[in-house]
Amino acid sequence: MVHAFIMVKTGPGTSEQILGSIRELANVTEAHIVAGAYDIIVEADAEEVYEILNAASNEIQGLTGVTDTKTYIAMG
Image 1 (cartoon, rainbow, N blue to C red):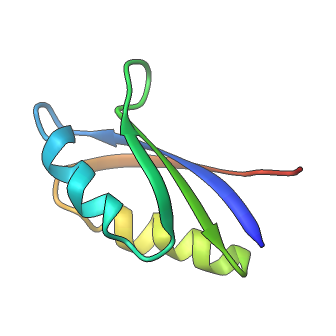
Image 2: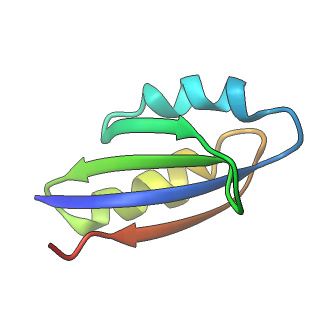
């Protein structure tokens, strides 16, 4: 099992509406709006690293209002 954290930057005023769409994605287990360099932190689980990378690069980055993502794979 692969566990990851995906940091998401959004456009002004779009975090709340994007949050609902992110929470509905198949590999997402948690998603929260946060204060700091990123606007949303997502936790995701999958069988393979490829599934995590697909969730970040295709599914999350494909949402209108998402401007950047950074993915961190948990090591332990």
